[in-house]
Length: 365
Ligand SMILES: *Cc1c(COP(=O)(O)O)cnc(C)c1O
Image 1 (cartoon, rainbow, N blue to C red):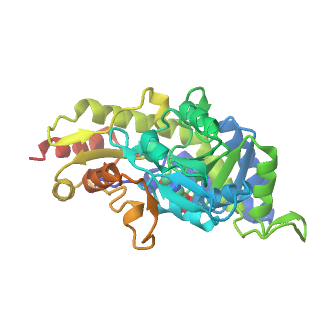
Image 2: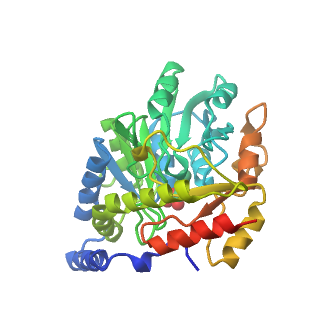
Image 3: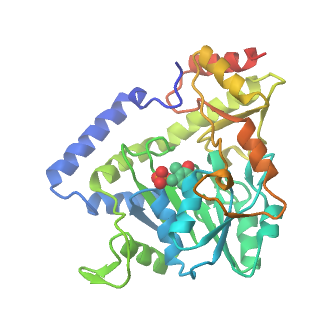
């Protein structure tokens, strides 16, 4: 089976470097929020070309912590997309705010500005823009639109590591960007990890307190924070994997380019491509098919794994029975959820595997 990810096939040099990093941490005798975390934070901030990175426990917490640091009031509204990992919406609720779900643009599967416009109320405070599947789309226009409406722009960058557009990196356009380093993300740790990036010194400082029980100084708690500390082992390994991220992203782009040029099956459609190669880091390669479930079965029969991102849009989740949505409904998100299928696109795929996926997709009748 051609898998969605295969970390055992990572380059031996990377495996060695990670093992050395583990030994380095074990021998240091310091395991949580230490030099490795500081070093990774500096390197991640530099890679994102942004002043501050704050390492936290995971991507969900990165969004929650950033939102809490923005000091909105309970019940204030954040507009986001229903076509995302549930964590995007959950983080808004956990921050004491109210999510409002706008529809997607069917061409990109990304948040539709027209729909966001329809969701605005006097309680709207921000837009959580999700760079879904790795596609950073018109971030400057979003930043300007949000500024024009007095709203904060927040970026969910969990799928868009180092995507660039409009002269900036994902996470650098709004109040803060939230990254996840869950194992399957483009930059993944062998466990849970995340980071918040921001140009704002004060926001970074608040986030540093919030991740550690709200401590401003040792044993002085200026607010009620949480425990979302990044540990030294994850940080040390992330530092090693970061060295390889550009190469791995280049490989994803090669694979996506081949899919785009070689797929030729009228039953299978693709999303609109990014306006420039650097604006998409291809966290997931998604195809659209009216007979999606039959396609998934066919791929499986051909030895090709696939997954659905996402089969149930947030507004259809049992945990969100009365979430507010666009008054015109969310038809595009629902259609996308019914037709989308992610096929393997990861840095360890061989050319032969890419060919096998293309063949399997083209043979679907
Ligand atoms: C993975 C993901 C998250 C959550 O990250 P965790 O580290 O799993 O908490 C949030 N948003 C999106 C779009 C994601 O893909």
